[in-house]
Length: 480
Image (cartoon, rainbow, N blue to C red; front, side, top):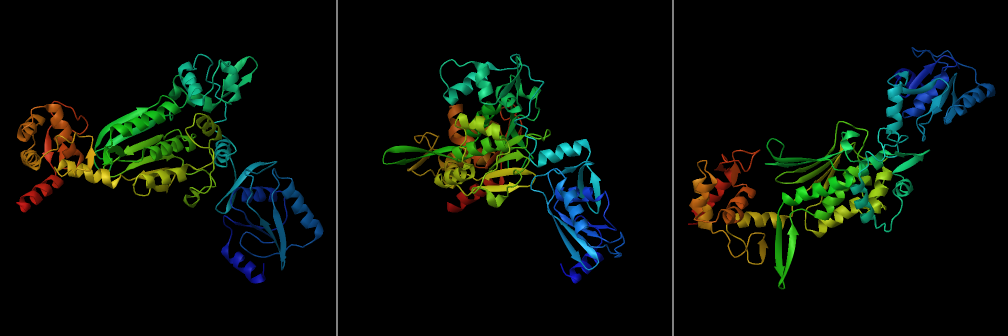
């Protein structure tokens, strides 16, 4: 450092990375620990609080005392000592093994002050730095075997391919879901998440919320389910919710039928599994969300990316926030251990012909999936009576809705109408067939909308024409 650089530091004043000290004192250790626990910084010895230089004599003894103080921290703090004129500059490096403490406790830097961490702050600090692991922590409230769900355990054994009749307690200890304490079996948090009868009795945040929105936002919700049967069941239930509320088309090539899902199922399974596995389980007021909108599906996980990961790292490196949860999922083939989840998601999306997924990280980690354009366009074509011969859907191709039928239904829906009135306009006698071939496709295509959104099957339900339906009618009349 040159004298000109020092002059700049003296003009800046104390801050989050700069501290002035008139002389070496017992408080130096606190400053060292505080800088090591944040982003590092510089301590200027021989400078008053107002920036006035009074100087300090440089000597080997002084340097040795500073180094001794730094080495006696736990873990030792790395420093570099540099004389600049009459000032001794102590460069403090950010620790790679946070949190650092001294005999006075834990400290960190906030603005221009060094503050001692309170108990709750120490706990949060350890958690953020990965020194406290949620999945490995013991859950003393869990009582074995009273709170143990043997059916979940048996299902996990079957998926893991563990045969024979191994002793349950031995298996639980070997897979690290629990540990022995004398004659008592004490469960880890990960074991509770997998094998508790009532998981939310212990962790209220342990559930997945799935919702189906009417449009592209959450203003109108058509359906919502909370799944809290344990990690494995929740993932499967979330996938079934998606299957129920998204389309599947088919393509016929060389007399063979190929099903085409609207969204890539394997990629969604991977995304939901990752959301559960990598979420920050210490955040008690949030849970995993799977949200289906008209133009996308979002899988949202609390806590953002694990420490040390950025969006640019996705697909190239992996940091497992909950390694035991990951291991228990790997044993039943829900994930791979190689950290290839994002790559597999991207590969599956491309293979299914869907747009590239988008990932966001802002305190929550969100994976956004867009629909397969072929399936989406087919839904509109089906609703307007323009289904091509080589591309079908779950609607029986023998009974495609004709354009006159569609036009009659849409014209009737200019005034809010019952299902019966629309069915009569279409000239359909069978109610189920009318719903399958005409009504549902028109709603899915956004040409009709429900008047009672939260109760689709209400006896008072009505249907009305949308702007998309009006546009279709206009185009139909122009062609005549």
